[in-house]
Length: 528
Image 1 (cartoon, rainbow, N blue to C red):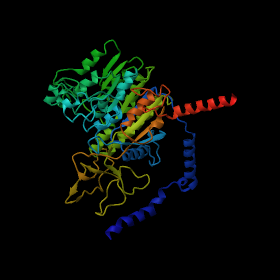
Image 2 (image 1 turned 180 degrees about the horizontal axis):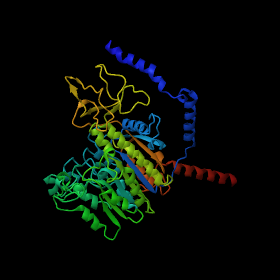
Image 3 (image 1 turned 45 degrees about the vertical axis):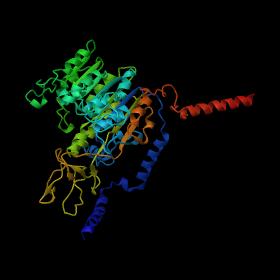
Image 4 (image 1 turned 45 degrees about the horizontal axis):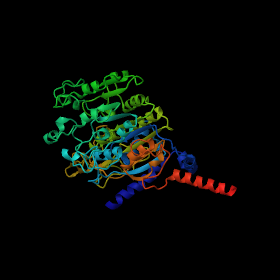
C-alpha cells in the first residue's frame, strides 16, 4: 500500500491540475503557431562573423541549469505571472552550448579552478587561480613559472579598456583569475598568507590587483583587504571585523590613487559618490562598497549600495569610450554563496538581478560589434522536484507529500545545512513559510555548507562569432573562443581573414576562397 500512495496522489493531481491551463493553451493551434514562429526565426538567423570590438562577459557563479530554470519561474512570478512561460533576457541568446566543469584534480570543481579555465584558457587544480595544474594548492614555490594570463590581459595588451564588476569582494576567486596568479585563492591579503608564502615572496591577491594589469574599472567589495590592520572602515567604524587587515601597513587604495596620478581616477565606497562619477570624463574607477562581499540583492540598501544593474551600466559607459573597444567581466557571485547556505530564495533573486544586468548590457551595446556571453562556472546540488501545479510558487511545497506523510519543498538540496531530524523524522514544515528569504531548504545529507555539483553548465552567446559557443565543450575553450572573436591574444586569424589552424588544415573561409579560385581558373580555361 505504501508504494502505491504516491501514484494515487499523482493521479489525483492530474485530475485536479488540468484546470490550471489557460483556454488558449488547450487549443493545439496555440502550440503549433508558437513553434512555427520559433522555427522561422531559426531559419531566418544569419551568422554574425564580424570581429568583436567589445566582449561583455556575464558569469553566474553557481548558476546551474536548475537555478537558471527556477530563476526564470521566479522572475515571472515576481510580475504576478505563472512563471514557467517567462522569457529571461538570457533566453533570447540564439547560441547555446554545454561546458564540462571538472578540474585537473577533482570531478567537481570550485570557482577558482573554473575561473582559471574560462578566463585563462587552461584547466588547473582546485583552489588555485591564474596558474597551471603544475602549481600545487597552497605551495607558494610551485606557482613560480606556472603563471597563466587571462583574456582580460590579452584585451588590455590589444589596446582595449578592461573592467571587473562583481557582487563579491574583488579579490574573490572569479575576479582574481582575471588578474592574479596565486597558489591559493584564499590569499586575499598578506594577513591571509602563511609565513612560508610570504618568505618565498608570493604576492597576495589584493596587491596583484594593482600591479599585474592596468584595470580601468574595478567594482565590488573587499575594502578590508586593501588597508592596514586597525584602519577603521568608513561605513562600519565600530565593527572590528570590517577594519583593515593588512599586516604590511600598505594602503592599497592610496597606492592605486597615486598610480593614477594625471588621470581622472575616482575611488568611491558609497552610492552617493558613485552616482556623482561622470563616466564621460572618467578614466579609472575603483568602487568598493563593502569590507567584504556586497549585500544580497534582497537585503541591499538602495540608498548606500548600487545594484548590479547600476554598476554594470556605469562600467560600460566608462569603458566604451575607448575606440578600440573593451572587455568587461560582470559576476553575479552571490548566487553561489546563497546556495552554499541552502538559501534558494536568495540564490534565485541574485540570478534574476544578473538577468536584469544582462538586459542593461544589451541595451548599452550594439550587437553587431559586441560579443555577449553568459555562463555559469559550476552548478549546485539544488533539485527541482515533486509535482507542483502550474504557476505554483517556485519557493513553495510540493502538493504530493512524502511517504512519511510530511510535505517537502519544490526546491531541495542534496546536501547542506538544511538537514534536520526531529525525533528521528524529518521536520514538519506545514506551518513554515518556505518563501521567506532566510528559509534554509531541506537537504538529504548534513553538511555545514552545500557543495557544488559536477554536471555540465550552460554557455549562451550573441553577437560576433557567437556561433562558436555551441556543442559540448571543455570549459577552457571559452577563453579561446572569445579571444578569437575579438582578435586578442595569440590567435589573430579572424581579423586577418584566415581560419587555418596550426596544422595547415583549411577552415571554412579558406575552403570557400579556394573553391572560388578554382572555379575562376576553370572558367578562364574554358574561355581560352
